[in-house]
Image (cartoon, rainbow, N blue to C red; front, side):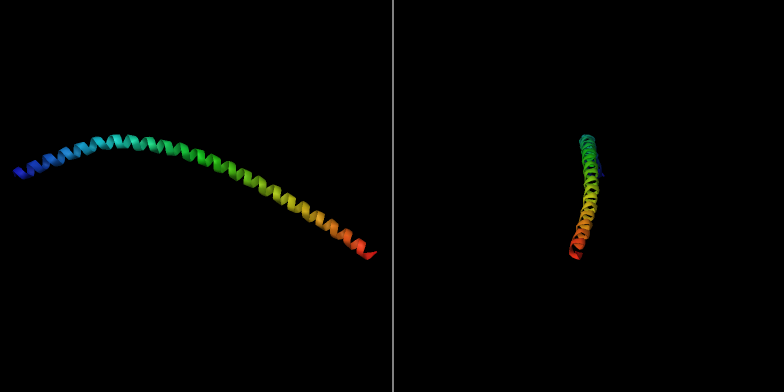
Length: 85
């Protein structure tokens, strides 16, 4: 019975010590989580900007390809007219 009481006191003391340490650990973790949320927001903003730039570049590339096709068709027509003479 005496051993059980001693064990209970030791376990209770350890539990209280861990509980106090947990509160400070939770505060530190909350600070880290808040920092990570801010960093994620920044990364998302950068990714959105990159996506917008990529979309613009894709549209410009498609316009350039269409213009190149048009020029190529004109050159082919000119070549064919010259070859028929």
